[in-house]
Structure formats: C-alpha cells, structure tokens
Image (cartoon, rainbow, N blue to C red; front, side, top):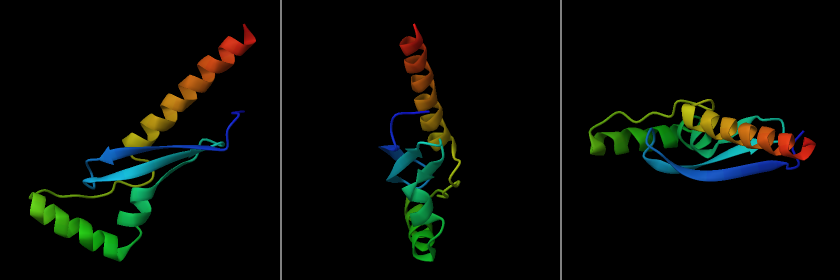
Length: 89
C-alpha cells in the first residue's frame, strides 16, 4: 500500500489542446480534469469543437483511461515498486 492519499501532475493534453491535471489516488484509480471539463460538460464540448475548427483538426477527450493518464499511473506504480524493493533490502 502506498504512503500517500493522492498525487497529481499537470500536463499539456494534445487531445483537447489544453493543460489538464491528472490525479492518481491511493487505490490507483485515475482522474483527469479534462474529462470533466470536455467530456461531461456540453459547454466544454462546444468549446472543444470551436477550438478544433480554429486549429483545423478534431479535438476530443478520450476519457478517463487515456494513454496519458495510464502512463502517469504506471510510472507511479513502478516508482512505488522500486521504493518497496529498496525498503525490503
């Protein structure tokens, strides 16, 4: 079990052309602020379509299990495994 409750990082997400915050909780569940803003909100979806037209490409949030969120979670899991192995030595 990890020694922290939640950890977060802010990244640039090319899927929505904006910065989002990825949060990993103690149980390894992952949340992304971009999902709530751009996927669950009709206003956010409209803003994404407008921004996509301006950039001349399709912008779309891929959801809470996008590759960026999973990579961050997996990185933390690997760090915790390495930390746990050092503690046992």
